[in-house]
Amino acid sequence: MSERWQLTARLAALGLIVAIVQITAISQVTVFGVAIDISPLLVASVGLLAGSLPGAIFGFCVGLFIDTALVQTLGVTSLLFIAIGYWSGRLRELRDPSHSLVPMAVGAAATAIAVIGFVVLQFMLGVDAPVSWLLLRQIVVTIIVNTLLAIPVYALVRRAIRGSLPEDPRRRRRRAYTTGGLSPLQRPSQR
Amino acid sequence: MLALLVVVSLILLTAYFGESGGGPFHSIQRGVIQVLSPVQDGASRALKPARDLFGSFGDSFHAKKQVGQLKKQVATYRQEAVQGQEAIRDAAEYAALLKIDRDTTQPVAQYTQKTARIIVRSVDNLLRDTIQVNAGSGDGVRLNDTVVAGDGLVGHVTTVAGDTSVITLITDQSSSVQARVIPRAHPRASYYGLLKPSVGNPTDMLLQLIPRDAKIADGDFVVTGGTRSGKLDPLYPAGILIGTVRNPSPVSIENDQEVHVSPAVDLRQLDFVQILTAPNGSAGGLRAQVGP
Image (cartoon, rainbow over all chains, first blue to last red; front, side, top):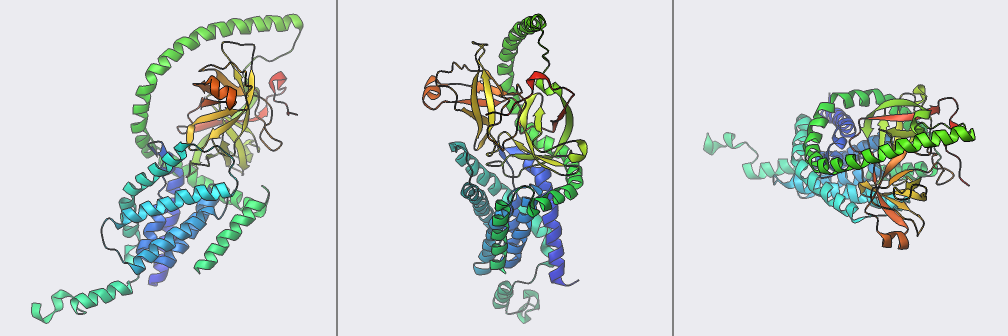
């Protein structure tokens, strides 16, 4: 199986399993009165590891699955998750951040996009209900909780798709620049 | 490719939003949840211990707070139960004297109750509050059937497939219930209003459009009114407990015509619900009527 198909298969399995576990179990666990939702973290992690286009496609598929399984308006979650997957992938392609806390920052931003975007879209679609300050509190708590969960989710996604990730040309170029194209063990001066 | 995905999402959103409940996208959704329901049911059962473990941490703190309040409530309710029993006996005697054939049992008992396990809960609980259960049209569940848990109102059925159905909770932003306050200080009075959720807080609801001169006190019971709030809204049987009034303010009643209501059922801690399907034979006088 080619590397590309292997990555596709792994992402499909990862998305399906995590989405089912999310809607059947994780969403029923509440922290500070807020139900945990790791799906934006999943999409952001895939974008960060696999790039913008795989991230956007993965986000679309996961969003469509969630919208269908929860019998909610089709297209809302997919639209938001496309933005999350693409944006996190572009961050990797343009900046290539290597700090270990990057998944936390990306996770917080992804959750903010998902939660605030969902609320805005729902209000645009005609939600007719009084809005309390508690809504704002819930949004903030959701972002904080997901920020704390971002690193474990990123580690899980990296472990799941590590073997089938394509070689990043930027990283390959950078390694070639710093090592002279060879592993330090193979340099003549270190033989 | 990215533009294509965005366009597809927007087309789906527009088409889904514009079509009726029987449209192709809704049909596809029903088919998908029908296929997924066995998987979700299995996963829900398998992951229940882990879910309970996490839930128990928060619950233990919450339970300690509630013990004191509940002890006080038990003493009050015990006294009221004695008075209630006397009132029921008197009512039965009067009914016999007037030859009124009226069923005095609980409204819930007049329906066939189908117990169902919750297999999916909506991921987002800010604006949407739905659950999916493992009972569907094959079990006699129909669209708009009322759903209760522990004799408190939970919501109504909004989507039905063969072995599964989706229930929209009373705390969902789209929900509105015609409700009635039974003031304990004035048992003969009752005040009707429209119960709406308080967005962002599933433990709080707002009873709106109550009379400005309503005499409502803390802890008064709120039950279903037995009429529809709109032509397309579900018809809940009359007399099902919804919750209790919380800290009513005379100013808020006079100016805003609203009071806060705490739901009787903790909707976040449910594992099972009862769906009220076809009434048992004659529904008697307590069946809900269509409002004007």
